[in-house]
Length: 220
Length: 220
DNA sequence: CCGCTTATATTGTCAGACAATTTCTGCGAA
DNA sequence: TTCGCAGAAATTGTCTGACAATATAAGCGG
Image (cartoon, each protein chain N blue to C red):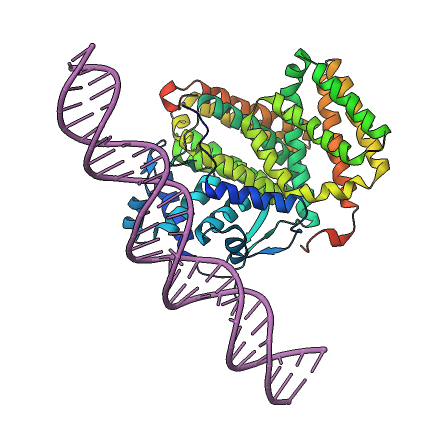
């Protein structure tokens, strides 16, 4: 009766490739060949092809006809556009999540405390993880599976930017200040204000990222 | 030097299936088997499978492990969630598109005139087409490919609802009134107001659709 | 009419093949 | 040396055929 359905071969391949991409083992822009993975993982070409396709539609890889797939890397403009869409969706998440979070604010407060600790102790990696949790809490509380799925895809396309952001200590401090303001607005029931803060928060990330050097992006 | 790259076999299959779904030849919820299309289209299973996958990630079909694909049909809740996301994105489109449209408002005005004509002559099919063009104009003018692509996917999942909506004449009139208000707001440079109108416009569609009978949706 | 066993259909995955397309390599010309 | 091109090698796109695993339909007995 279990829903277990042990992972299919394709799913395993998807998991394996995802891990290698996210760990940085496969760099943005790098080409993946079918043969590489049929050999390395001992599966057939059809399976690798199917995994490639799923990962491409998931935003992690980019597919080009007759040229295979590469680890997705966006152009400056592409990142800009992504943040526009992401901003709109995160704001929606705040709108939908606020009442839910307000009903049980402990989780948000705890998270904020943890974030503060990570910042003051200078643990950037932990801050990054908690930051994701922070946004994840809103998305989850919003109770909209499609919204969550859409944002997940978007984030897949820019996972590689997280690293670059962490080195900007000052920006991290700003980011955390914005989190605090957001938490305060939510707990005070200032819905409208919370949405604006989230929008500005995403905009700030966008601006920061746009300031990165050109060699982090592909040409347009 | 041409960018022509004549369509691949998979693309042809995708096109063929899309056409049959959108024409109603394949009904929402209906299961598609691989063998049916290998025979009918004279292509191999691998090709059909790949087409199925693309269509599923595109929102037109739904994929279930070991059970193949079906023409996507959403539950009441699913439609609700989709309209929440769609609303946020259409509002973004208005925000981004307004300045562009304002620079050359002729196109929007023409479109509105056509819509009015369709409404007064009671040509619902034409209204539906123009309605899509109307929204398409904003999305296109927004100049954000990712936004356009995301909205396209969403619309793929609810194409089948358009038909149901057209029978509600009164609602069509309301819809057109909202279009007019939106056009006015844009041309008057009332950005903020235009966004609100678009939001309400999508909300109205959502409400209308939620009023449809249960047998238009899947169970939750 | 219901539930169970069995037969049939369908999906998941593999192996191997070949044409079309892209990428690499080495050589001759500017 | 650098550039461009022809041929070689690699890679993708697609097909055929196969078989195990899973799901669906058909019968059968109660």
